[in-house]
Image (cartoon, rainbow, N blue to C red; front, side, top):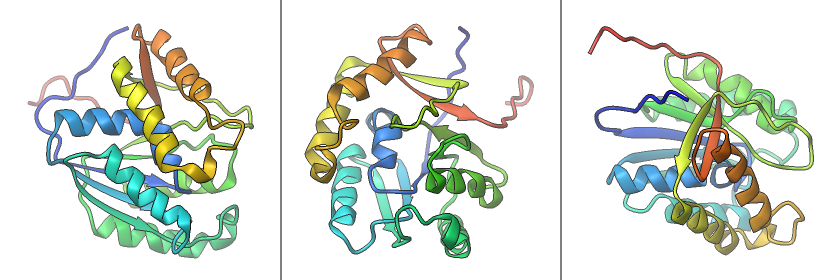
Amino acid sequence: MIGLAVGGGLDEIAVLGAHCDDIAIGMGGLLLAICRHHPGVRVRALVLSGGSTEREVEERNALAAFCPGADLTVSVADIPDGRGPANWNRIKEQLNEFRLSCEPQVVFGPHRGDAHQDHRLLAELLPTEFRDHLVLGYEILKWEGDTPRPSMYHPLDHDIMDQKVELLHRHYPSQVGRDWFDESAFLGLSRLRGVQCHARYAEAFVVEKSVIDFVRG
């Protein structure tokens, strides 16, 4: 396992989800770690569904907790849950508007192989707006057997994972009764990804394309 560390400062990231809780489940640990080590980082978030519902309230409170000390802005649209493909034009417009509002160094969203149609559509459209950006696809454990073979891992400390699980349960009460929304599921996947990168815990990401330069500083 050969690691590459991100040098210099991290000024701005963009995080996108099809539904409220996607971002926190897929990369909540990394968000906590980034905000801990890069105070004042700009976090620009877009969620496509849940606008003007209790889910939007949950999402805004959750992302504020997952991004302590960050310069955070959150936009929650009202695309109907499960109807992403039927709202292709609206989603494309939302992404274009969001892209014009930020200049992130890294973009996070769902991965293209996700079995949920809303996740998958967002993953397919992200590179059409963020054409010259590093786009990392997070994974969401659920009923479908669509767990990816990730190509990038971020190790996480035990306290970060404990905090992630606690914040998920505190800020998403509407989801607590679901059979996949529990501590064992969240810690189990992160433990598996930790084993794969010689760490206790990790969150993993799919990278479709990246450029590496060993010469230019």
